[in-house]
Length: 344
Image 1 (cartoon, rainbow, N blue to C red):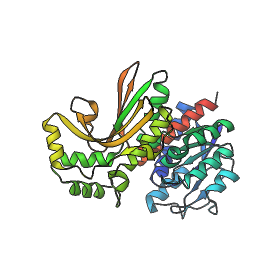
Image 2 (tube, rainbow, N blue to C red):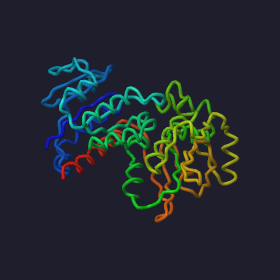
Image 3 (cartoon, one colour):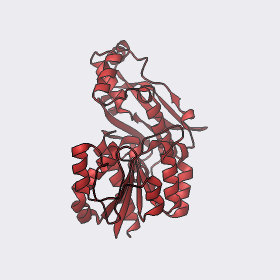
Image 4 (cartoon, helix red, strand yellow):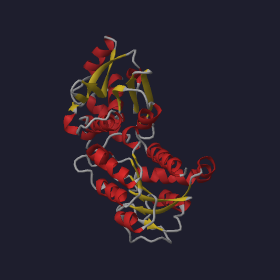
C-alpha cells in the first residue's frame, strides 16, 4: 500500500516533518514497510502545493533552503486550501500542524473534525483541539474507524503519551508531574546562574526560546494546556484549562532560588496531575523540588515527566520538548503507529 499524506500547516513543524520524509524515505520503506506520497501542502503564508502523483520532497527542501517557503514551487497546483485537501483529495492521513489556539482550537478544530468525518486518519501536534475537545474528537474517530494521534502535543518528539498509554498499559498511574515548558525552565536555570528574571527572559527571546509576548510560557498557560491533555488522555479525566490551578514564574526572584538551593531544593515550574477522592486535580506552579529527585536536575530547555505507578513506582522520562525536527519525529511516530495498525 502507498499511503497518501496531506499536510495542513507548513511552519516549523510541517517543514521539519517534510525534511524527515525526504531524508529517510528509503529507510522508512525498508524498515517499516511505509511507502508513501506527500501529495498536498496547504499554508496561507508559506504556500500551497498539490500533485496527486506525489510532491517532489527533495525539490521542496531545496526551495525551503533557498527561500524559506514554497510559494514559487514549480509544476504543482497552488489554487487549493486546507479543506480542499480534506474533501477533494484521496489522502489517507491528514497531518494537522497549524498554530495552537487555546481559546477556540481554530482553525485546527475544523480541520480535524472535517477530516475525521471524511474518514481520514489524523495526526496532529496542535494542542488546542485536543485540550478543548478530546472526547468529542476521539468518539468521532471511533465512529469513523480511523485513528487520531497527537503525541507531539505534550513533549514534542519525546514519547510521553505513548509511554503512558501504551508502554505503561496495565499500570495504574496515580500522579504525573513534570517540566513541560522549556522556556520557563531555561529562565529559571539562568536565574540560578545569577541572572535577573528580566535578563533571563531577554536572553530566552534572543535565542528564540521565548516569543516577543512570552505570556503563554511565563504565566503557565502552555504548561496548563499540556496538563489538561495529560489529565484527560492518560488519567481519564474530564477537565478544562479553567480547572487548572495556575501560577507562572514572574514573581520568582534570584533570592527565592538561592534560598531554595541552600535548603536542598530547586525551584521548577511543575505541571502536576493527580487522582484525588473527588476526581482529577491539576496544577501548574513554581514548586520546590528536592535535589535528590530526578526532576530537580532538569536544566535548560529540556523537559521531563515523572509517572507514579502501582507496578513500577516512579518512572521518569527526559527529553526535548520543542523543535521542528523533534516535533516532526512525533508526527512520524504517530503515522507509523497507524501504518502498523491498518496494514495487518
